[in-house]
Amino acid sequence: MKTNIANIDELRHRQEGTGQLPLCGRCVQSQLERQHVKTAVWREAKLMVVENIPALVCPACGEEFIGPETAAGLQQMCQNGESIVGLVSRLIVPVFDFAVLNPERL
Ligand SMILES: [Zn+2]
Image (cartoon, rainbow, N blue to C red; front, side, top):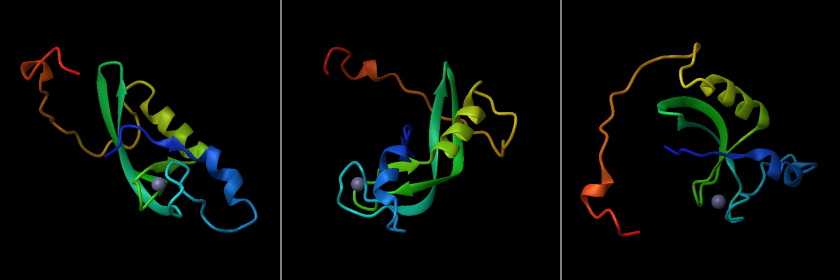
């Protein structure tokens, strides 16, 4: 699950006129494929998971791209950290403190 999805706008010009899905804008190695993805979104101290997001995914590097309408919908769904639509389940997740390993090492 990714916590950041790139916007497809930057790739749109590569698609014009070809009828094909664009090449990955990150690795430029492979043609993107249509898939449904999920992402985790932080809003202040609230964490949300959104599933079933239509996206273009690079089979080579795994980068995920979404269109502007999908990005707007995702933004709207997550704006307050608690969506009023589309809630299907809740997760209980473990939270760990990395500082117990070595707080000063980068
Ligand atoms: Zn790629």
